[in-house]
Length: 492
Ligand SMILES: *[C@@H]1O[C@H](CO)[C@@H](O)[C@H](O)[C@H]1NC(C)=O
Ligand SMILES: *[C@@H]1O[C@H](CO)[C@@H](O)[C@H](O)[C@H]1NC(C)=O
Image (cartoon, rainbow, N blue to C red; front, top):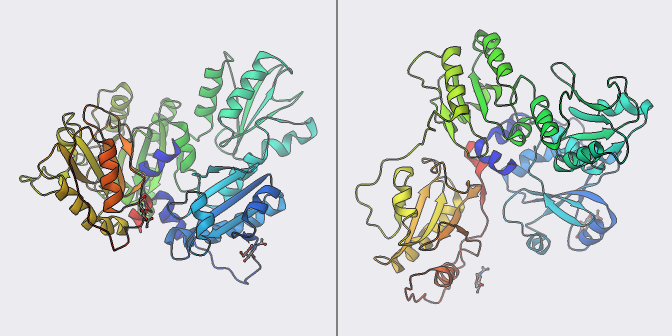
């Protein structure tokens, strides 16, 4: 879910990271360890838990992250969690060994095992995530530690449940599934709970909630999803991941000044409260994140309202022709929930002539070209601003020529000007993304080889159902770099 979040919220994190640059007054020694081939393996081995950023000095997102990363390193040092970085322009082997393809790549190593980090790139978020990683899924706490524990993160879930009970096992199971997101604990006695039960402590709204009714894996999960997000908060880089995690459709109210923000707030919050647990509602500051409206197929005109399904990426902008009203918002929200409203699909016009070696795919001809089961299809998803895509273009064009007139289609799709059809089984995470669909199959295969003519052609030869004999001339020039660009570049 978090990956799709990156797409759903294109740029939200990136923009405000830029806005959040702090002025350091006196330079101090860095708490971030600088690692290289000589000491990388040993450092990973010596530390049970460590956060590592693979970066390149020229990368804009890395620069934006740097001050936040420094703050996080200092705070995490206090709790004994080291934070490190690797300069991939110098330590090429270390980065290659870890499959680094884009910058920054952030990984958490626990007992030497890496997992990629997709959480917020602000100091608070990094610290909170690593603290959670350092705890067991469920911590056993003593009564004197309850106050400290229950306020140690934005949301903390505490149970009073006998050891070896079925309920305790249920809590353990749910806690394991959500260990990246929330802190869980058990305690023998808790003044907030009479007998057995679960309480969710939070630093917003009513401050705490008790689980009522059934105690099952489903009801506990539902309870946590419902109460772990505020009724209607303002969304930003430090909390957007939690909305994505919840998996619920996300409704955005864009405002550009205080008057707009407050004009509908009482009514909006009433709707948000009514739909709690089914749909999340947020305020979004259009002066900072106005460009996000475009991702919801809205015009940048305020106030505005739109809903996005965070799992599928489907978008439901509220019509901007008529005046915004809470009544219309409510109708749209209900329609999205009961499936009666169709998502909005952005498309460039279908090209009248499409006779170039590389076929131009837009949203409205996607099914006809890319899902034509008689053909093998190689498709590149690109952005006009993406440098790696530009480097690939002449190579891709050559490949298109090799297969011209055959049953192997070479196609491209500008993913900034077109939405994928809603039932497409993937979302785009970076540019360029190259995928292949064999004739007769509805599955897509990722192309992740290098971007030389030779490699792409040999990939097609190995996978295509139709056979076309292609001779690739000896390559003298280097292939385009295999890196992808973060989709968030969109905002820069
Ligand atoms: C690790 O080795 C690199 C050189 O490869 C050096 O610059 C760096 O300071 C070392 N880091 C630590 C934490 O020892
Ligand atoms: C790309 O892959 C081909 C075949 O695997 C290899 O011969 C070539 O050296 C690779 N090029 C680069 C720059 O990695």
